[in-house]
Amino acid sequence: MKIIKEYVKNKKEEIFNLVKNLDIEIKLVIIQVNNDPASDAYIRGKLKDLNEVGIKGELIKLEVNTTQDELLKLINKLNNDSTVTGFIVQMPLPKHIDEELIKRSISPDKDVDGFNVLSKFNPATPNGIVTYLKDNNYHFESKNALVIGRSNIVGRPMAEMLLKENMNVTILHSYTKKEDLKFYVEHANLIIVAVGKPHFLTNDFKFNEDTIIFDVGINRINGKLVGDCDENLNVKFQSPVPGGVGLLTRLSLILNLLEVYNNGI
Ligand code: NAP
Image (cartoon, rainbow, N blue to C red; front, top):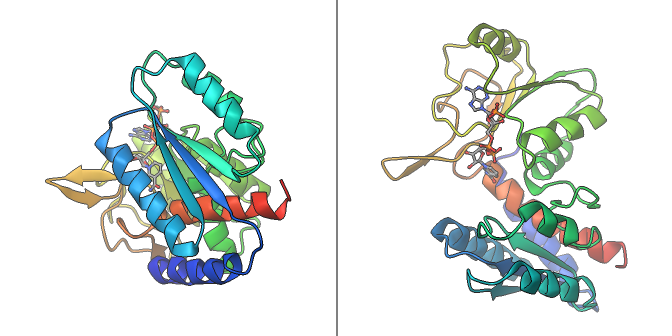
């Protein structure tokens, strides 16, 4: 497996060279309806990435007392604006706004975050992981995949995507018994951990020699960013935190935008 940081850097250079020769401007709009510092940081990262590859990024930051109707009107406007290639609504939304309704109102053609169930795109995190594996010529077929966590943005779509690659897929969750967790971890070739708990996977498990792990978790311990896995697990490859799945997720958004462009929408 290529080092994720280098892989993403190379992909961004390729995209920059491609985008600079296009006759049309590619543009992403980000709608934010919160004052959440974590969201601010994610958005800064996304805008920086876009800038680096020559794609226009625009942030529309609304007051937290914006009504659901006002937000729906803006979404409708962006759905119909031909100068907008794609757009995303940064989560979380204020409590008075129905998140599911908002997700469903984004045009499936422009929903580059893959939030709408009808979206043409897979959610960014699982899509980033599968794209990376494919670019590394990973052989998926008939291998055992283990997905730990079943959220709508990571675990479930991840399992669905790996199933499409003809893997044997198991999903575990908070009701899984410890002894079953051990069994599945020790029989897996590919593990995706998206739990949100540090030290969830440690070298107490007897991993397969060929096991590859993607650590999706983001946890803070005394201000330090860590994943769900201990560092240096006895496996063939483990994605680092930071500098791992987060970078793949951000790249995935750009790849989805290019796909909207390629589809001529
Ligand atoms: P989430 O909605 O909180 O889901 C966590 C999942 O973990 C749930 O399905 C939960 O099971 C399961 N779980 C909790 N304790 C468990 C246990 N002891 N054994 C097995 N499963 C357990 O979180 P999420 O949105 O999927 O995110 C997961 C982590 O990834 C978080 O740390 C988040 O910050 C991070 N994340 C990172 C990126 C990135 O780009 N790097 C993107 C998205 C998320 P139940 O369903 O039974 O409750």
